[in-house]
Image (cartoon, rainbow, N blue to C red):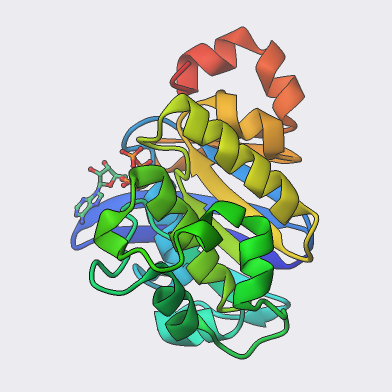
Length: 231
Ligand SMILES: Nc1ncnc2c1ncn2[C@@H]1O[C@H](COP(=O)(O)OP(=O)(O)OP(=O)(O)O)[C@@H](O)[C@H]1O
Ligand SMILES: [Mg+2]
C-alpha cells in the first residue's frame, strides 16, 4: 500500500466536513475520487497533503504516519499536489517555471522528459505564464509538479473548465503518465474523464465514502450515478 487513510475527520474551524474517510491505494494504481459539488473532494486531498490536517484518524504514506506533519514535509516525502486553481507564475516563461520546480527525489524527471510527455509545452518554452490558455496552464501545472519527483500525485478536478478537445489531450497525457512509475489519485465530478483512466473509484458524498469499486461497475449502476454524480 502506498497510502492508507484510516477514519479521518477534518474540520474548517468549527465546521465538521469529513466524517471518517478511509481509502487505500496500491503503488502504481490510478484511482479517482468522485463526487458532486461540496462533497468533500478538495478537503480530502488537502487533508492528505497536510494543508488542512485531519483532527483525528491516520494517514500513512509508504507505511509511515504523516498525519500532523506540515505540507512541505509531506511534499518532500513524495506527494505532489495539482490544485484546482492552477497557480502558475504569470511572469516566468514555461521553461523557467519547470527549472525552478526541480527537486531531488526518487523519480528522475527532467525538463526534457517532461517535454516528451507534453510535447506542446516544448513549443511554448519561451512563452510567459500569462500567455497560456487554460489547458496549457493545466499541462504546465502537472509538468511542474512532476519536476518535484512525486511518487503519489494528487490532482483536484484536472478536467474542470477545459474545452472537450483539451480534455482529450489531457487524457492522452495522463495515459502516458500512468505508464511511468507513479501512483495517481485525482478527483472529478463526473465519470466521463475518470472512467478512461482509473483502475478504481471511490464515491464521496457529504464527507463520507459512499461506495468503492471499479469504474465499469459504477458505469452500469444508474442509481448510484444518479444519486452521487454529476452525469
Ligand atoms: N474554507 C472553508 N471553510 C468552511 N467550509 C468550507 C471551506 N472550504 C470548503 N468548505 C465546505 O466543505 C464542504 C466540502 O467542500 P470541498 O471543497 O471539499 O468539496 P468538493 O467536493 O471539492 O466540491 P467542488 O466540486 O465544488 O470542488 C462544502 O460544504 C464546503 O462548503
Ligand atoms: Mg473541490
